[in-house]
Image 1 (cartoon, rainbow, N blue to C red):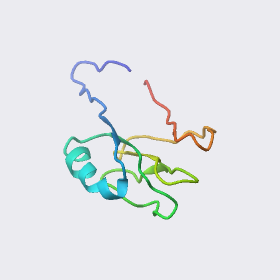
Image 2 (spheres, rainbow, N blue to C red):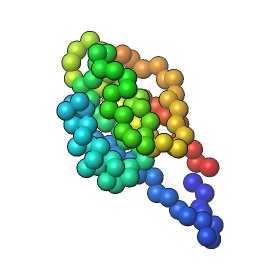
Image 3 (spheres, helix red, strand yellow):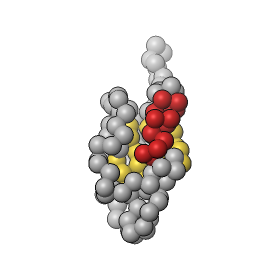
Length: 111
């Protein structure tokens, strides 16, 4: 990453990684006690326990993108999801992974 010159504001990217053990039951605590209170830029959650019955718009945090999710297939539990503070550029990379692998890939910029 390039160093800011004199008079340039420097912003540290804040990333939260949390094992929520059920996003439906813990979205409120995650949102109010972590994400908003600490102005997190990127939120990564594991063990979402979400499935296809849960709407894609579930749990949208005001000021953040919708969750990008990879729900566990075939059995209950698991799952990962990511959301970004609005204004951050993000794009999910199309990386083929085995169905049992709960992973998502996003490019980084070093400009």
